[in-house]
Amino acid sequence: MATPYRLLFVCLGNICRSPAAEGVMRAMLEAQGFADRVSIRSAGTAGWHVGKLPDQRMRTAAQNRGYDLSSRARQVTDNDLRDYDLVLVMDRQNLRDVRSYDRESLFDAKIRLFCDFCTDHQESEVPDPYYGGEQGFELVLDLLEDGCRGVLAHVSSTLT
Image (cartoon, rainbow, N blue to C red; front, side, top):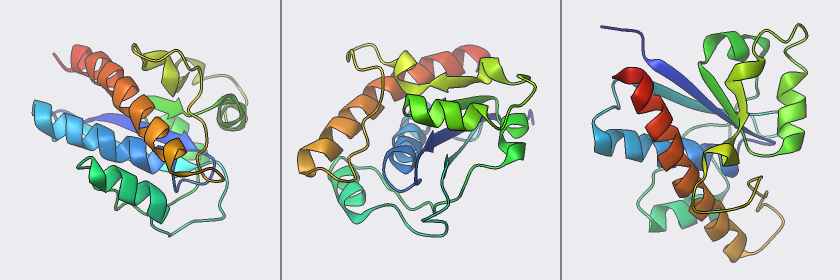
């Protein structure tokens, strides 16, 4: 069997946006029959929450839409840029942080802003909902569903 296409979603702490993106993408891949052909993980640029489940508010909002968020937080590593085919970051600060691992600019083309894949929303970044209310988590999920549809189209074109 061919090596799976490898996707990595990145946010700051790996407890809200990136694990939610991982859960949304996993559900979409399963629905399209690509689950065995794409490997998905998420990570944070900071290590504060390593080993923890996603934020309970994010898990609740995602569960209400049918998504399972059960991955454990981890921090981005130097090897991630080499090991993943596409690294999708949630905001420009994440972009700067992840690019700092790529000192020789070898992986620039595979590090992208997640919202580049959105078609229904105009936001250029996925806002961090951590310090906001419930509506922030819903907006994040709206953006993630939109962008993951675009990511799915991109990935499926490379698999066929």
